[in-house]
Each structure stands twice: as C-alpha cells, then as structure tokens.
Image (cartoon, rainbow, N blue to C red; front, top):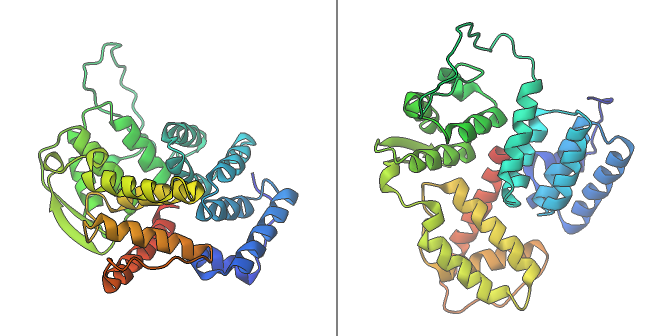
Length: 316
C-alpha cells in the first residue's frame, strides 16, 4: 500500500543516513515532530512509516515503534524495509516469535513465481524426523535473500535437519558484507544443533574460525551476566529508566558481536563506558571513576559507538 512520494527535509535525510548520533537534542525533537506530523497525515506512506519506526528504535521507544509497525501491517501494508526495521523492535522487546509470524505472513503474500521451487511430486503423509525443509527459494542463493526471508528460514530450521545447509551458511558467514545480525542467528542455530564443524566468520572488521560446539552459548555468557549485574546495582535505585535502556543496548551489542567477544573482559570498564555514553546522549554527565583507566575508557566508548553504527547499518 503506497501513497505519494515524500521529500524529507535535510535534517531527516541526515538522520536516515547517519542515525541520531549526528543530531543534537533540538534537532532530534525537530525530526520527531516532523515525522509524527507526517505520519498523522499519511499513515500508509511507506517512507514515513519506515523513518518513524527507525527514529523510535534509535530513541529506544520500542513500544511506539511496534505500534506504528503493526498498524501499518494490519492495513495490508507489507514492505520488506519496514519488516527489516521491525526486527530491531521485536528483538528489543523479546518478542521475536511475533516478528517471525509477521515475516511469514509477508512472504506468503509475496508473488515470487520466478524464484519458487515447483514440486509436483506427491508426498506421503508420513515424514521421518528430522525432516528437511523445502524452502520457497533455492537455499544455494541464501546469501541473496532479503533479511526477513533469511530470518524466517532460520526460525523454521530450528525444527529440522540443517546439515544440507552447512555450505550456504558457510558462504554467508565468511562474507564480510553480510548482516552480522543474521550471522549471529545462524551461529546460534549451529550451536543449538551441536554442530561440530569449524566455520570462518567475518563480521564488523573481525575474522576468526569457530567451532559452534566449542563456543559457550550466549545465554550462559559469564561476562554478560557480570556486566548486567554491575549495571543493575549501579542504576536500579537511582535511575531505573536509564537501567532499562542500557541493559537492552548491551544485549543488542553482545548479540550483534556474537560469536566474537568484546575487546576487554573488564566489566568495571564496560559498566563505566556504557553509563557515561548513555548519559552523554541525554546531555548529562557524571564524575569519572578514578579507578578506570581513561585511555581504555575512551577506546571502550569508541567501540560502543561502532556497535551502534553497525546496528543501524545492518539490523535495520
């Protein structure tokens, strides 16, 4: 469902290209005001809906992003870019099952006759487990699929034999240009299946070979648990709102890095770096912890900014 093309103001175009990091407080408010007013007048305009969801995600207003996205989809407004943007929304809300359902509906509505694999062979009702997925498109071209379709396939693959897909997964993992978010999803799937095969992984300027069966699950990451605990103790009573936001951000960064790890395991350093970085986004400041090496703190902050930029470039 489309409406007339819209020409965004320069400041909105700047946000869409570079994110909120280039906006001051007044500029961010101006972008929000413009997009919300535009949305109220054209709620079915794909450009506006995409931009508004992207802005809400950047501001950690995931509930608003979800509301706008679902309203658009309910009006039969299926759009790959919007579904891609909503992946960040539902991930942050821990509602990926709902997201996968939306993706499935979208794919069912698409007319991709040139890519569909036609199978006229009658099949028995009895299927041995584990069974092999029959993807709608050639799995050898997994690298070329859109992100929503890749995610929908990976969700289905959890219930099936994935050995036939090792080769296309390996091609995707070693391609430095592909989504680090999808790579993390693939690696988690390989871990769940206890795959004892070495894969070369390239993402975010990093390159290393990993055996999924030898890497600890992200859910059992002691570094993450310790960092979350320190951030919670630091902010749960004085600023619970900031705590909620920083915990979401840390989880997103850990996931987009996976299976790689942060450049340092010093959780005191990362607690300070994430706290100072988020406070600065709100124009606030706090006295530096004298126990933290300032050069390491600067490097950690730069790393956080790179993760935020990578998330905007690929997750969305």
